[in-house]
Image 1 (cartoon, rainbow, N blue to C red):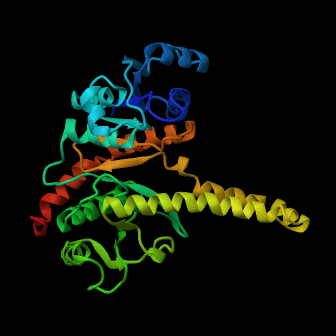
Image 2: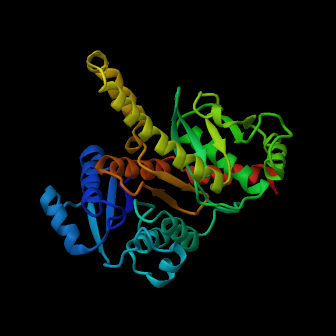
Length: 340
């Protein structure tokens, strides 16, 4: 297999273009000739950044010039229509034209989702896309979807999300028989609203899936499940709560440790354990959230992605392409007659 062509939205994100270009260069250093990266954005800024980082003229890079940018606060759908030459749109177009096989952006999440959906459409048999987030648990990380792509869901859509999450856990996380749970306000079959009750019935009929039933909020981090499914409204709320809780707990712990000398000494002695804990919670290790269900590969990084997160986001795009994740999704959707 030759180099995997990937488009990078250089202008998207709070720290663009600096951190994005730094991540691109880290990817070149870490993965050698694995990828050919198409850098989409302001050509002058890209050339200046690459020159500063010692990568100007690298044969593994192609600059795709465009000056328009969709800002973080802009309305996604309106921005896509009014700015067809924005870096996110051009990156998605490169995939549509088969110049690239996937793209990474740390820019406006809604715009990245919208551009992918509108330009590529859905994979055959699928209704709506889902954003995957890998969240830390006591035993590693679990697949959480949808974290914000599709707010209004039907039982069929949630069931398809579960299938996509199951495939992602098997192909990318190498889980042999991932436990799949439906997020609900109780574990009993009859719990929840009409949406979750009907989804429960569909999921238990999916052949080959290790559906463990409803899971509650306190089950998420225990390691009980490998894949958790919910609609994008609930998922985005859960995700934002998790992000802020992790930050607040770290600040509270640090403040308490500083109150007494003996606690400071204990923290110093346990600094190795704290470092490992921080690494396990570090979302830059994950790189970004893959958008599953669309007919292409898109990974969306956090707005404040640093170079490490960008490098890992590029890696995830490449792994999804190399593992033929979309082909696996289409194959199983066709096989699961219960979904039609």
